[in-house]
Image (tube, rainbow, N blue to C red; front, side, top):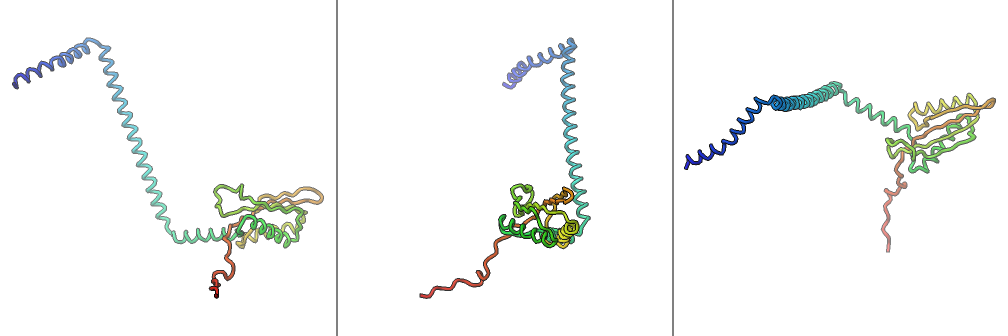
Length: 226
């Protein structure tokens, strides 16, 4: 039985061997067929080299990126003094908050800013011809915190040199002394012989939480007497 199986396997492989022999003879006799096979193998070899180069470039990029991140982390770690930096950052935030006005709503912020700009002009002996306070909440930058309410102020008054300069010094002093202050956006002086000054300012108001009524927490409701 084993001999029969071997004989059958040999007989079944004869067509395959014959086909390979025929292909070998054709390759010897036909130059075009050989050239075609050479081109196919050559193309596959070049394609494999290109894939290998792409893989090497990708890995090289990853290594360089990792090295850059490591060097940056080492550089930051060597700088040190993080405690002092944290304190300085906290002081900067505190200083910035000191420049803000505080009000519970947009309406109250407009009233507050109107009162404060009027007082500021009065201290410099300036009588405004036009004084407008408008909310700038709708047009404020997207990155500005939601609790910050910018108020836009427009002032027009007669130009008097001493009073005008005294007012500007007063605004600058408020900022230097870390008090709630106004930011000047534009100044224009026009007209002769009686010049008129137009000034646009912005006051940044921090939305404050409503204060609890005095004594509300310390005086609980008394029980009713029947």
